[in-house]
Length: 273
Image (cartoon, rainbow, N blue to C red):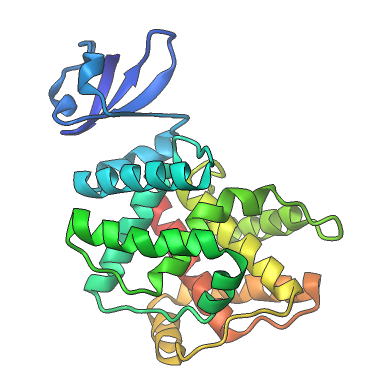
């Protein structure tokens, strides 16, 4: 692997023997200089199809969190017999960092659909709970049990996105929502980025729940009021998305769902900025 540029001490942007660009991960490989060859024995993991917009995200994720995400993806893949794309470890690492930041700020969101997910995805939820123990062991961070639900979504996201709803064009609705975000914040959203993939997974799951009358209802009212005040732009945009969903699906979007839209919109936009 020939180095193009360093990302941090343990991650480098390289080109392989076939001329393909790749992000490589391994202890200390970030100290190799541009055009130097990194011995394959020093590389623990390779990540293909990484977009330029995502390098900043990778640079700011601590090494132990990336190591943890890699271990979890390998572990879950083996247990479920599923092959995830190489980028899955990076998107999971980004999620773990965000979850740890929320824990450190004492921001805890209820997951009222947690019990439903045990019914729908028992094996994935069991693995998600095991994952919480792995995270604590490898990073020293004890995340609340409710985080198992969001981890489970990571494990099933690819399968959710593969399922097609013949009577509803969810892809078109998601694209319309994305255009609203671009208009409200005067930005161009990279539709190949990790954070956009996470946003679309949440939006797709929200649409499916709206159709099935399975909206989230919990006691997050105080957090909703706080986010509404702290992120007025994201809140107004979330309301516009809610109006669009109500128009398309003929279902009222509850404040609880708008709360999660605010969080995802704010995260998506902050990463772009």
